[in-house]
Length: 480
Ligand SMILES: Nc1ncnc2c1ncn2[C@@H]1O[C@H](COP(=O)(O)OP(=O)(O)O)[C@@H](O)[C@H]1O
Ligand SMILES: Nc1ccn([C@@H]2O[C@H](COP(=O)(O)OP(=O)(O)O)[C@@H](O)[C@H]2O)c(=O)n1
Image (cartoon, rainbow, N blue to C red; front, side, top):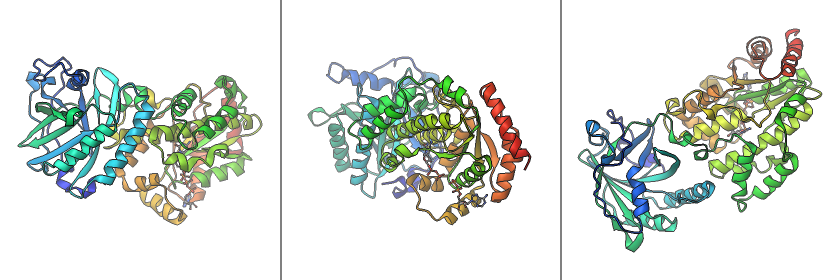
């Protein structure tokens, strides 16, 4: 069930200027204490919630969290009706390994999708406590144009099913957003309504305030550990045993890097930008093998992992990159190597996905650690990003005539996702990507790649060895 099915006035809107959040404890508290839910209730007081919309997340918090000078009512979007009800629920549980929460949330999403009526809409969202960045948890908001007892019952059932102490009911009325926390014990104990107010977005998307909040991997061990937490997922035990067999437990990235006497060249870009075409030409010209990621020993598992939640899916691609790195180091001792997608792809797609909504302005700021190459992964000597205007890319996709993956369909439909993805690619660093205009003919792209743009401006990226390799690479190109 998508937002599209809900009256559009509920989801297209702009917000007035929000107020700043005050991180001090609230001055007044109208809650009752002493119940076994006190812990959850205390946490709830500090929570900032966010609903994802096309223009980015709307952050809001309890009015008692907001300083007096900034006090203002919830900035009601102008396209909103005078009255709306939202229920929010999550499957995250504290002390659960994060991957279990994420899997549970994905099951919850499936249940919601199977039970929503045409008058409802589903919006994704999240909550976090600003002083505790690892408290980030995803949640779902179900919107209804009226108070709706069957929907309320369904959300309560979901909260019970997924072991939650509570769910929230939000009522938007006459420019005020009122939140009621509903405990799921005893058929649902309702707590007094509290006013919610829009707050300033945090300086960085909360998914990137703590490394455990997102599906971007900066080490081999994190990917292995995440997968070890879910041995029951199809393909995991095979993936773990292949990775353990091919990536030595104590591999030393510096010595792998030293082995690469010849250039290691990576081509990156959105689908149908011409990566395969160009890697094949480069491969021929350099007598270099063209290696693809994910690599053959685990490629057959790709479809299985593509249907998993983002964290498990990217752990798979991450292990693929490390397995490939072993093969690259072996090959590059004797000849150049060309790679069709590597860590830049895994990371840019993951960042763009985790940000969830809005355009590139929602990405973590340039220079954020999330954009940095992992210290334990072999670095290419040259990495290029093929950029093609959307009209040509669309025509090439059509021309290729292959079935599209879910991600490709998303890319095609979502201009915003594409903007986040391209900008995420451009922010990756050490090594950063050399941009190649790949809109011309195959001949032109090949010529500009090898003769002018990317190669002649190749950064002296890694070691002295690498510099020598790039020089050797340039020689045959320039003589053509
Ligand atoms: N420079 C180009 N001009 C026109 N068509 C191209 C060009 N490069 C590739 N193509 C065509 O576009 C399609 C996608 O190219 P491909 O190399 O498979 O892209 P990718 O590997 O990035 O998905 C293929 O049909 C290919 O023949
Ligand atoms: N190293 C890699 C390679 C691919 N991928 C994922 O795989 C998707 C597409 O790979 P693909 O081989 O089908 O790409 P194209 O040849 O269609 O451009 C990317 O969009 C990424 O989501 C990744 O995460 N990491």
